[in-house]
Length: 480
Image (cartoon, rainbow, N blue to C red; front, side):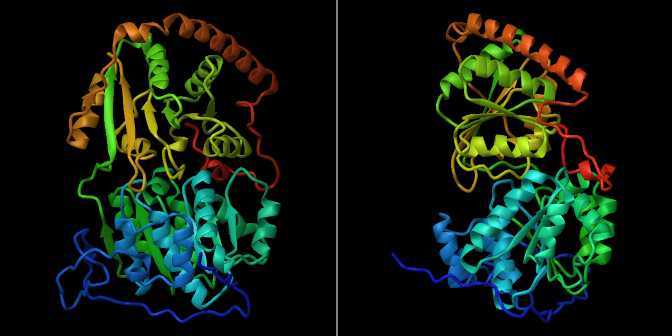
């Protein structure tokens, strides 16, 4: 086995020169999937060549290639193959790609390579819409940069600002933050400045704007240096995204690996079952027995339903754990860690978990409640069949869900196949499920009574206190 020498990012910090590439054209050039990004020459118009087979061929240095190998990255994904060479050339990028396409490495690797060449404090800033996504991005940076000792700081709402201020005082290379809490530190943390920043990333930019972070982003952009590289990644494009890119990017190239506005990956098997509402819980338990031993995410519409389903399943012996926006940050991270570690095989979640959470080896996604729109459906089922792996998504459709289900099919431009079930086999579980439902009702009643006495929202939720309590601090915590 080849030994890898650990190189540290130490020594004198200094600013590196930035070359800003200008263009007379206001139209954003597009890089299509069929093109090879290293062969692409805007002026010459050379024809695309074959896809690039390795990270080394993309221009990534050996130490980062070794990190990719150790993490099991066998070959670049399409978005990585398109974006990385352009980023290494110093271009601003708009990346449009489906969930689970490897977007994080697409922007992390070029930033880490530039950092390796010219080490500097506060070198890169990544803005994410939710706390969980911020932690996941930081984890990816630390894993990819493990051989060069990269230092990251995570700055999100719902956590004490003092330890965060201390972390910023240690001058990390990369800051991963949600916008509201970052602005709190910009305005209140003495000595904290991003005036030497070289790279800005806005990940899940469509979600950033959906959560009304727009005004906060404007304030953050005003204090960042103009001489920087900016990457904007999004699953979808909209007029808001176009406005954001005009305000924050210079002469960007658009990299797209999606052929449709609404698209799921080819390795994802999608089905539905059509059932009467009264038997919904019973069919859910039947499906979980059919897929016993496989990691599963169950999506529900409300916090209350998430709690109820988790209690019901636990009373039936399933290792289920709830995840929603009314849990404290520590409780949510604890739930995710148990699911990642496979000590719990079932995660019952609201849409707080639908975006950005990189949970490896999720086999099944069950839409217990149909999502309100096609965009949310795409992001839910994107939890499985990630990075070329196969996966299975099943939507439970009752007599009251037909219209919204048809709209989803129309947006996807496909008709989902029905998952075949035998009613007699399903009804075998009916008596046990009814008993579990009674148990869940009792526990939910006790939970609500306890909430009323304590004035809390749900177990694990902590009230925000202190001088930094403000409305924007909770914007990165989706309520589900």
